[in-house]
Image 1: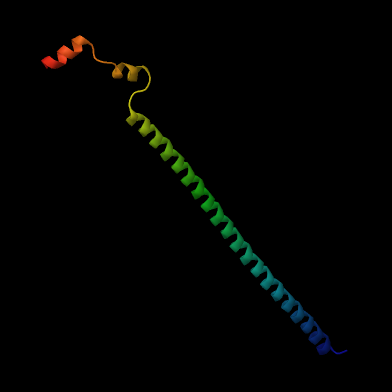
Image 2 (image 1 turned 180 degrees about the vertical axis):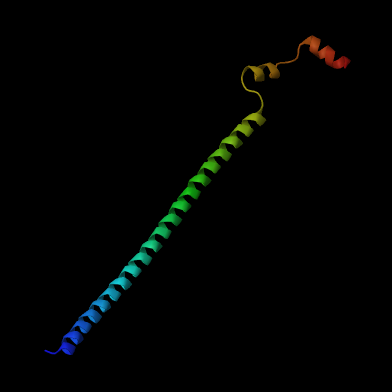
Length: 99
């Protein structure tokens, strides 16, 4: 074989290797892009879950505060309510009339 034929065979093998390496690089780029898309989707899901938890906690806090406000509006309960519902004594009644 001549030197040129050996070089041409080597050139062909190198070109074939380059072609396979380019194809492999293209596949790796596509896989990397798919991984990035999947990671972005996972982050979005995690963010949405965090928002949902925060919304639930906020609604729970609001409900608790509304219940507390309602309890404050209803007036006294127990011994204070019993004392307030009693008829005023005679001295209190006269004092109210004088005033």
